[in-house]
Structure formats: C-alpha cells, structure tokens
Length: 424
Ligand code: FRU
Image (tube, rainbow, N blue to C red; front, side):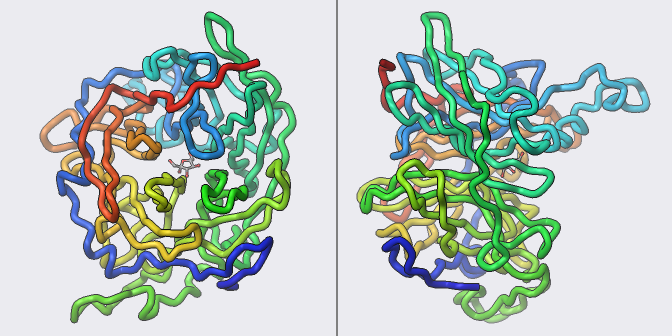
C-alpha cells in the first residue's frame, strides 16, 4: 500500500492506527460512554417501512440545516412485508426479524420533514425507481449547496459492485411540507482501487461506502470521508508490532485477526463542485482490530478534528471486543495523527443487557447523537425481542479534549437544526 501522498498540495501522511492495545481499553457499560436503555415500548415512525441509517440535511461545514423552517432527514428505508407469504413462519405469523435482516438488499433513500426537528412526516423516495444504477441505495450524505435549495446527495450504489456516486436535485418547500425535485442523473465518482482500498476481487466481504463530504475548516478544500478496508488479498494482511501496540505480557497472540482490516478512507476533490475526486491513503486503519469502520464523519470543535465511526461487536478481531456503537478519534490536523477518544476509542456503546438496541450513530456538531433502534429485548432472558426499524432517542454528549461524556437524553429522532436557510 502507498502510505504517503503529495497530491493537490495535500500534505503527505501516514494512516493513524487503532491498535489492539487501544481496543483492550474498551469497557462496556461505563456509564459515561453507554447509551441509556431504550425501552421496548418505543413508538414507530412508520408502520409500512423500516428505516435505519439517518442522514440529516447539512451544509459542507457539517451544520445540520433546515430550509424555510423545515428540518429534513434522509433515511435508508425498506418496505415491511407483514402479509408477504415469504415472511410468514410455519405458524403463519409474520417473521419480522427475517424481514428486517433482509432489508439491506432492498435499501432505498427516502426523505422526511418536520417543523420541530422530531415527529418526522413521510416525504417519499428521493430518486424514482430506475434512476439509481444498482439494486441498493446505501448510506451517504445530503448536502444543501445554496439558498436556491440545490442539494448534492452523495451515496453508495451497491450490487453489483460498490461505487461512491452523487445525484443533484433541489429541495422545495411550501407552507404544508417539503418535496425533493430532480435527482434524475446519478454520477459515478469512484470505486475501490485495490492499491490503497480493498476491492471485491481481493475480498468478497470488502466494504467501500458511506461518503461524507466536507470542507476542511483549516485549508478550505473539499474532501470526503468514506468506509473502506485496507487493500490486499483477504488473509494477506500482517498484524505486526505497530498494529498490536503496547500490550501487557500474554497479549501478543493475535489469532486470526489478520482478517479484520477496516479503515477510514479520504479523498480530495480536484474541482470546486466535487465532480472529480482523487483517493488518498486512509486516515485511520484498524488492521488486526476490527473489520468495519462505517459511516465515518467529523465534528470540528476547538480547532480539533473529531473523527467518529460506527462499528459492531461481531466485526472485532480475535482477542479484542467492544459494544456496537460509535467510536471516535481526535487530531489537531486533518491528516492526524489521530488518537482514540477516551483512551480506547469507545464513545457511545450499547449496554451489554441490550447489545443490539441501537446502531448507526451520527454525532452532530451540537453534541447530539442520533441513531436507529435495531432490536430491544422484551423479556428477562433476551430471547424475545421487538424489532425497531425506527428512530432511537437522541443522546446528548459533551466532547472535551480527549474525552466524551453522555450528559442528556432527548426525544425519539430529535434532530434540531443548527441553522436555517431561507430559500430564494
Ligand atoms: C450502517 C450500514 C452502512 C451501509 C448501510 C447498508 O448501518 O451498514 O455502512 O451503507 O448500513 O444498509
């Protein structure tokens, strides 16, 4: 893998490492980094669809933005099939868990709007059927470009392949609601290259998705974060001293951890519009630690770069573990070096009594963290569950130096705007 670059005046950098030693510091159920219990009697946003990854409309600086007083969110969405014979169990009952687990294959981008930053009203699909070039419309970011309401939706076109794409449209408001117009022409931007970022040919379980474009507050250039895996044939990665870190005696054994190769990717735009991109080496790698660092995003605060990314228990490597939730890293400059927040990287994890209660946390610059409800146990043993597919209660978090603290809990799906744009 190339580890340095000098493209477009971008400073050469070495990826920062999330090491096994860092991950050994992860402590589930630390109250300062654990999401409060989600009650099994949560309300459902909409009974016809499942929603999961939530993408608030924002500007290129990361500010969550309303338009003419309307808040807007985009969500990955899939129909629920309570009456489809395919999803009935042998007793003829709806097998909601199977339907939920199948949702990724039919994910589509929908939008919702609200006057209050919660109680979201259904908008509909962003792109008409047939506009997106592949079967799955996976996560990304809607960017409000200007006061004409133009929106660039960056997202991932998946199956076949995985391509970072964008589609331009416009948000239109009335007294009664919001609609999305345009979004008719999808432009492919880039795919994994096999040199810095792993391709499907190198690993059938590769990840390459979740674009998050932003303007660097220091150099003013347009960049994009995304999820990747470190390039190379599956099984060929080395978990050496650097990846292991400073572990206590007896912790040198890494088992099969060479199969876990997540990274946070970064690209720089060659043009002002973000139509032409150059991939750069990853900002952060987790070789030997974890196989997925999904939906990476930044909060720019106190002159620092707070890098957040979501990950799972099941994607951790042999000998290390942690809860499903959001992890974070901080640096003084865009290209690092990044150090794990709270020592370990864990910022907000699920409580061990409800390990799947929420996922896909998105940390906003006001310290609010939104996520979706996956499943919540309804009995003591955790064998009975209630599937969510809806917005979780928002968590309030304080970010201070190298640490974060859970400090508040708000209503379900509470995503208040940080600024309002009056459309011309
Ligand atoms: C996170 C995620 C994203 C992906 C989407 C697919 O929940 O795995 O990385 O884009 O969900 O449904």
